[in-house]
Image 1 (cartoon, rainbow, N blue to C red):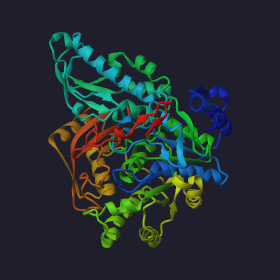
Image 2: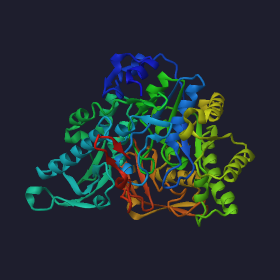
Image 3: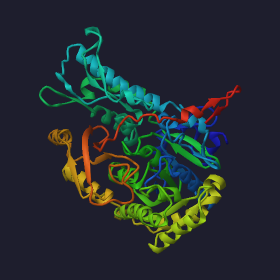
Image 4: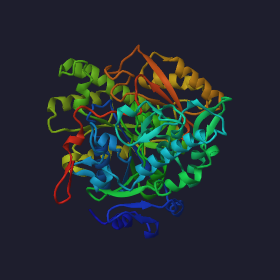
Length: 539
C-alpha cells in the first residue's frame, strides 16, 4: 500500500480536503466538490450481475479489477463501493473487499469498523428510537398512536430473534409496552438517507422528514417534531464524508455508505460518486446483487434523485450461477442452456429497457470447465452482446484488459439523454409496483395483502404517492420465491407489507417472506476467523 496522501496526489486532491484515519485511509471533505466544480464529469460504469448463488459471483472483485484495468489503459479510474456490513462478514458471504490481486486495502479495517460510519448510523437510528419512546413515556404531547409506530431499532449484525420484540416490559418505570423490532443497519432509513444526501443541508432536510409514527388523528409524526435533528447531525457529521482508500494496484477507491440491494437501494453514496466523477475519467460503481435489484433501484431511485446517469453496464456472469438456475442443481447440459441462459437473457433485456449499453463479464473461477465457459461465450455472441472472460482474482487489472476496452467502447457510444427511469412519478404506488413486477421480474400480476394495501393507501393519503418504489425481495430468484429459477413466467408477486421512507424518498414494498433482519447460517464465517498472537487478523 502507498500512503493515502500519494493516492490523493494522483487525483490532484489538496491535503486540506483530507481527514486522515491512519496512514492508509482518509475522509474527503465535502468542500472538495466545490473546488472541483468546473472539472469535466467522467463516465459512470454500472456493475451488476445475473441472479447470484449464495456465495456471490464476484461483482466486487470484478469492479475493482475493471477499475485497475482501465488505469492500465492510461485512463484515470476510481472504483466506488459500498461499505461492508458486519452481518454478511460473519454470515454466509464473508467480507466485501474483493480478493486476490483485486482488493481494496486495508481490507481488514474496511471489513470491520473502518472509519466508524456504521456505528454513527446505528447510533443515530437508535437515538431516534430512544427519543420516540421517551416522548411517549413523558406525556406524549404529540398524541402518538403507540399501535402505529413505524420506527424500529437497528443493529449491524445478523440476529433473527430481534425481528419482532416487545419493549417497555417490567413496569411503568421502563416505558410503555408496545411491539417493536430491529432491522440490520444496512436496512436503516438513516443508511439510505446518508447514501442519497447531496449535501449537509440535504441530509438535515431528509432527517427532518423521516416519518416515525401516526398520531391519534392519523397524521404523520416526524423527526422534526421530536426536535433532535441537530443531535443526529452531530452523530453523522463525519459519517457523511466519503472514504478514500486504494486497490491492490494502488488505483483510487472511494467507499461510502452500505445499503443492501435486496432490502434497500444497494449502491454507494451519491456524494462518493459525484466526487469520483470530478476526479476520474471512469467511475466503476458496483450495485448490489443482480440487475433486478441493485441496478433497477439505481436507475429508478438513485438516478431520479441525483441525475447520475451511467454510460454503460457490466453484467457479471459465472458458469456456476448459470448452473444454479437448474431446478435440480445438477449439470444437465440442456438445463444449462435453457434455465441458466434464460435468466442471463432476462437481465440483459432489463438493462436495455433503460437504454443502457451492456457488456457481459464472465468471471472465471479455478474449477470452471472450458466447455461451460465456451458455451457462455457462444451464447453471448449469438445474441450479439459484447462479452469478455475476466480473471482479475489471479491477474489483477491484466485479467480484465479486454473487458476494459469493450466497456470504454460501449460508454463512448452512449447518449445519456436516452437513459431514463422505467416509470413516471405521477403513477400510483401500486401501478409502480406492477411495472417493476411485470417489466423487470417477469410476473403476470401483483397481489397485496390487506396490511400492505392499507399501508400503501395511507401513504398516498399522507401525500407520498409520488415517491419511487423500492421492492425488498429475495436475491436468489427473479421472483419472490428463492426456489423459482431461470426467468419464470405466469407467477404472481406477493407484496406482504410496506414501509414509508419519506426522508430517503422512497416507499419500500416487501415481497414474499423477505426479512429486514437476516439470521446467521448454521455454520457461519465467524467460525473461521481469528487473530494471531502477533495481532494479525485471519478471515
